[in-house]
Image 1 (cartoon, helix red, strand yellow):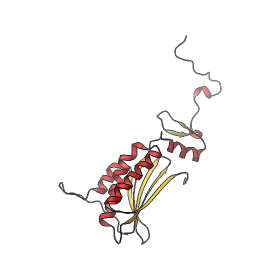
Image 2 (tube, one colour; image 1 turned 180 degrees about the horizontal axis):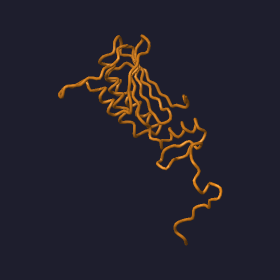
Image 3 (cartoon, rainbow, N blue to C red; image 1 turned 90 degrees about the vertical axis):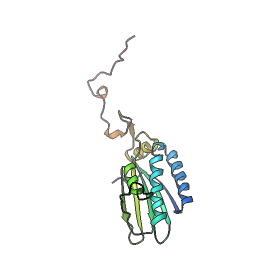
Image 4 (tube, rainbow, N blue to C red; image 1 turned 60 degrees about the vertical axis):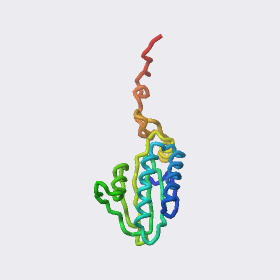
Length: 181
C-alpha cells in the first residue's frame, strides 16, 4: 500500500456562513499552490456543500475540520464533525431551496462517501481526479517510484513501467528525420 508521499492541508473551524467563504479561499489558494487550478471550482463547490451541511445539521456543535489531501493522482476533500448521524441523499422537489447538496457532490466528484468515527462524529468526503501533468502529481509519483516521465497522453508514468522504444532495443537503428536536407 502506498501511503506516501502526499500533500496535506487541514483547517479547523466553526461551520458558520462567514467561515465557509474563508475556507473556500484557503482551499483555492492551496490548490493553486499545488498547480491544481482545474480542480478549484469543483473542490470549492463540494466543500461549500459539506460545510453547509455541518452548519445546518450538525449537533452538538458546529466545530469541524476540513482536510484536503493529494495522494498521487487523487485529491480527497474531507470534512470531519462531531455529529455521529450520517447524511442521507434526498430527492428535492423542483422548487425546493435545499436538499441537493449530496447530489451536487455526487455529480461533480469522482466518488464520495461518509463513515462514522467511533462515537465522536463522522467524516464526509469526496474525491477528484488530479490532472496527471500537474507538478504536484509528478513530485508525488517521483517520490514513490524514484523517477517518472510523461506518457504519450501527457500522463505521469513511473520510469520503471515505461517500455523502451524500438530505437533503444538492441539491433534497431535510431529513427531518421522525415525531412532530409
